Length: 137
Ligand code: IDP
Ligand code: MG
Image (tube, rainbow, N blue to C red; front, top):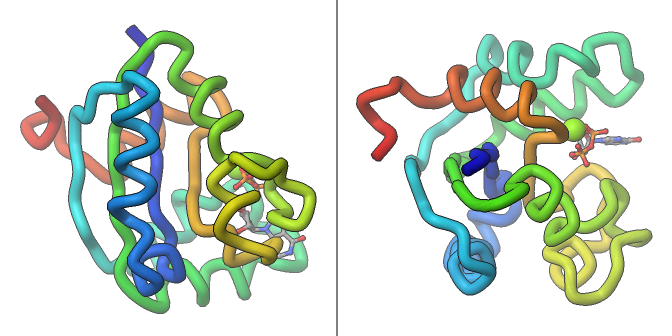
Protein backbone atom coordinates (compact mmCIF):
# COMPACT_ATOMS: atom_id res chain seq x y z
CA UNK A 1 0.00 0.00 0.00
CA UNK A 2 1.17 3.50 -0.84
CA UNK A 3 1.29 6.48 1.52
CA UNK A 4 0.89 10.15 0.74
CA UNK A 5 1.35 13.36 2.70
CA UNK A 6 -1.70 15.62 2.84
CA UNK A 7 -1.82 18.98 4.59
CA UNK A 8 -4.74 21.29 5.21
CA UNK A 9 -3.25 24.74 4.65
CA UNK A 10 -3.78 27.73 7.00
CA UNK A 11 -6.86 29.00 5.16
CA UNK A 12 -8.43 25.54 5.19
CA UNK A 13 -7.92 25.22 8.95
CA UNK A 14 -9.17 28.77 9.58
CA UNK A 15 -12.29 28.12 7.50
CA UNK A 16 -13.13 24.92 9.36
CA UNK A 17 -12.46 22.56 6.46
CA UNK A 18 -10.32 20.00 8.32
CA UNK A 19 -13.25 17.67 8.94
CA UNK A 20 -14.43 18.02 5.35
CA UNK A 21 -11.01 17.02 4.01
CA UNK A 22 -10.69 14.10 6.44
CA UNK A 23 -14.20 12.89 5.58
CA UNK A 24 -13.40 12.80 1.88
CA UNK A 25 -10.27 10.70 2.38
CA UNK A 26 -12.07 8.36 4.76
CA UNK A 27 -15.01 7.88 2.41
CA UNK A 28 -12.68 7.16 -0.49
CA UNK A 29 -11.22 4.26 1.50
CA UNK A 30 -7.91 5.63 2.69
CA UNK A 31 -6.56 4.73 6.13
CA UNK A 32 -5.23 7.51 8.40
CA UNK A 33 -1.70 6.68 9.58
CA UNK A 34 -0.70 10.00 11.17
CA UNK A 35 -2.18 13.40 11.97
CA UNK A 36 -1.07 16.53 13.79
CA UNK A 37 -1.86 20.21 14.00
CA UNK A 38 1.21 22.43 13.96
CA UNK A 39 2.48 25.87 13.16
CA UNK A 40 5.13 25.59 10.41
CA UNK A 41 8.26 27.68 10.97
CA UNK A 42 10.25 29.28 8.17
CA UNK A 43 12.90 26.56 8.15
CA UNK A 44 10.37 23.75 7.73
CA UNK A 45 8.50 25.75 5.09
CA UNK A 46 11.70 26.27 3.11
CA UNK A 47 12.54 22.56 3.28
CA UNK A 48 9.02 21.48 2.37
CA UNK A 49 8.86 23.85 -0.61
CA UNK A 50 12.57 23.60 -1.58
CA UNK A 51 11.68 22.81 -5.20
CA UNK A 52 10.06 26.27 -5.47
CA UNK A 53 12.87 28.35 -3.94
CA UNK A 54 13.59 30.18 -7.20
CA UNK A 55 9.95 30.83 -8.10
CA UNK A 56 8.57 34.39 -7.89
CA UNK A 57 5.82 33.21 -5.52
CA UNK A 58 8.20 31.49 -3.06
CA UNK A 59 8.35 34.27 -0.43
CA UNK A 60 4.59 34.72 -0.50
CA UNK A 61 4.08 30.97 -0.24
CA UNK A 62 6.36 30.73 2.81
CA UNK A 63 4.58 33.70 4.42
CA UNK A 64 1.21 32.06 3.80
CA UNK A 65 2.10 28.57 4.99
CA UNK A 66 3.73 29.92 8.19
CA UNK A 67 0.91 32.38 8.93
CA UNK A 68 -1.32 30.13 11.04
CA UNK A 69 -1.69 26.46 12.03
CA UNK A 70 -1.93 23.66 9.49
CA UNK A 71 -3.05 20.04 9.86
CA UNK A 72 -0.58 17.48 8.50
CA UNK A 73 -1.72 13.94 7.69
CA UNK A 74 -0.47 10.66 6.29
CA UNK A 75 -3.04 8.69 4.33
CA UNK A 76 -2.50 5.15 3.06
CA UNK A 77 -4.25 3.35 0.24
CA UNK A 78 -3.95 1.99 -3.27
CA UNK A 79 -2.23 4.50 -5.59
CA UNK A 80 -2.54 7.04 -2.78
CA UNK A 81 -0.46 9.79 -4.41
CA UNK A 82 -2.31 9.78 -7.73
CA UNK A 83 -5.77 9.36 -6.23
CA UNK A 84 -5.20 12.11 -3.66
CA UNK A 85 -3.99 14.53 -6.35
CA UNK A 86 -7.13 13.80 -8.36
CA UNK A 87 -9.28 14.44 -5.28
CA UNK A 88 -7.50 17.78 -4.67
CA UNK A 89 -7.86 19.19 -8.19
CA UNK A 90 -5.63 21.58 -10.12
CA UNK A 91 -3.15 23.85 -8.32
CA UNK A 92 -5.05 26.94 -9.46
CA UNK A 93 -8.41 26.45 -7.78
CA UNK A 94 -10.12 28.39 -10.56
CA UNK A 95 -9.08 25.56 -12.89
CA UNK A 96 -9.94 22.78 -10.43
CA UNK A 97 -12.89 20.61 -11.41
CA UNK A 98 -16.07 20.76 -9.33
CA UNK A 99 -16.12 17.79 -6.98
CA UNK A 100 -12.46 18.22 -6.09
CA UNK A 101 -11.43 19.80 -2.79
CA UNK A 102 -9.97 22.90 -4.46
CA UNK A 103 -12.80 22.97 -7.00
CA UNK A 104 -15.41 22.95 -4.24
CA UNK A 105 -13.78 25.21 -1.63
CA UNK A 106 -11.43 27.71 -3.26
CA UNK A 107 -10.98 30.21 -6.07
CA UNK A 108 -7.36 30.96 -5.22
CA UNK A 109 -4.12 29.85 -6.87
CA UNK A 110 -2.07 30.28 -3.69
CA UNK A 111 -4.57 29.70 -0.86
CA UNK A 112 -5.79 26.44 -2.36
CA UNK A 113 -6.79 24.72 0.93
CA UNK A 114 -4.70 21.54 0.64
CA UNK A 115 -1.25 20.22 -0.16
CA UNK A 116 -0.67 16.72 -1.48
CA UNK A 117 2.56 14.96 -2.47
CA UNK A 118 3.22 14.78 -6.22
CA UNK A 119 5.08 11.41 -6.27
CA UNK A 120 5.82 8.49 -3.94
CA UNK A 121 9.36 9.89 -3.54
CA UNK A 122 7.99 13.31 -2.55
CA UNK A 123 5.58 11.60 -0.17
CA UNK A 124 8.40 9.76 1.62
CA UNK A 125 10.43 12.97 1.88
CA UNK A 126 7.51 15.07 3.13
CA UNK A 127 6.31 12.45 5.62
CA UNK A 128 9.86 12.40 7.00
CA UNK A 129 9.89 16.19 7.34
CA UNK A 130 6.68 16.31 9.35
CA UNK A 131 6.53 13.02 11.27
CA UNK A 132 8.78 10.84 13.38
CA UNK A 133 8.36 7.13 12.71
CA UNK A 134 6.87 6.70 16.21
CA UNK A 135 4.07 9.15 15.33
CA UNK A 136 2.80 6.91 12.52
CA UNK A 137 0.53 3.95 13.16
P1 IDP B 1 0.62 21.77 -5.96
O1 IDP B 1 0.31 22.27 -4.56
O2 IDP B 1 -0.63 21.58 -6.75
O3 IDP B 1 1.54 20.59 -6.00
P2 IDP B 1 2.92 23.39 -6.79
O4 IDP B 1 3.21 23.78 -8.18
O5 IDP B 1 3.77 22.34 -6.15
O6 IDP B 1 1.36 22.99 -6.70
O7 IDP B 1 2.97 24.72 -5.92
C1 IDP B 1 3.01 24.65 -4.51
C2 IDP B 1 2.07 25.69 -3.95
O8 IDP B 1 2.57 26.99 -4.28
C3 IDP B 1 0.65 25.67 -4.53
O9 IDP B 1 -0.19 24.73 -3.92
C4 IDP B 1 0.20 27.10 -4.26
O10 IDP B 1 -0.16 27.25 -2.88
C5 IDP B 1 1.48 27.87 -4.52
N1 IDP B 1 1.59 28.34 -5.90
C6 IDP B 1 1.88 27.60 -7.00
N2 IDP B 1 1.90 28.36 -8.10
C7 IDP B 1 1.65 29.63 -7.68
C8 IDP B 1 1.54 30.90 -8.37
O11 IDP B 1 1.70 31.00 -9.57
N3 IDP B 1 1.25 31.98 -7.58
C9 IDP B 1 1.07 31.89 -6.23
N4 IDP B 1 1.16 30.74 -5.57
C10 IDP B 1 1.44 29.62 -6.28
MG1 MG C 1 3.51 20.46 -5.43
